[in-house]
Length: 314
Image (cartoon, rainbow, N blue to C red; front, side):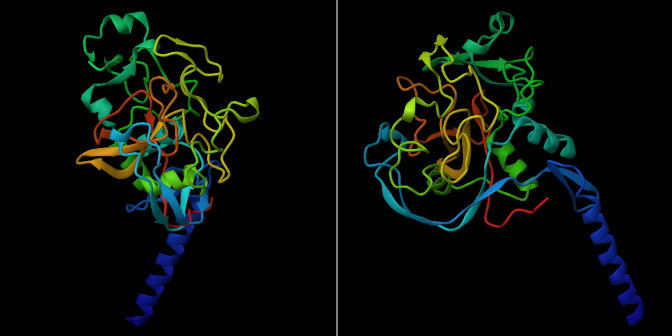
């Protein structure tokens, strides 16, 4: 009996090793066995190790006090890992395909899109907007595959950040990737690269050396974007310089969900987006914060993942 158990154990280990080995086969992704023993396509780990420590969270000079940007407080974070880039359409697609996943925007049949980006045909069918932000329109069949409504696609934007993902969607993706959403403190610490009360990931000046460092709205919001940074909407991840930790697009491009609550069911999002303008949404600062409900999605809202442990090498 003992001999049979030993043989079974050896066969089990051999099978597990061969499965794991066979699942490491596609460059840029890794295939890992799930609980049923089948291979699941998952994005390859591209994470940055961040040494923890104390830092000053928040700011002594809040621009939007009602957002809770201040007062500043000394905060400690332990070592962690963070995605170098925002999660892309290609990465999210691999998750959707592997799990037959349907996002909340797809279930609801609608999401919010900035009017500036809508075709006349789609715009003519929109009846509902946001009272205090009339440029935000509720668009039927807007989702991660159709960022500007049903007549748009991500065909040429697979390396752009995925949009129209709710907090719940982001959590599911991170769990599937054996990761999690970053805490607000981790996100802010990472944004500042450990420096205290730094406005932007690179320092306190917006365009040092006359160089463009991030993708925000340039021009007259919300009617004209002169695309001085090269983009009207999102940019492919990694097109602008990283901060000192090697993290890209920490501000601008797409808002990023965090794992922390803002108030009740409202969850904290950080970083601002391509829709932010200093005269409208000066929230593309490391200390800035905003919120959405867990099931909310929008044309400028994405995420990146974090982890306590070292990611699996591919």
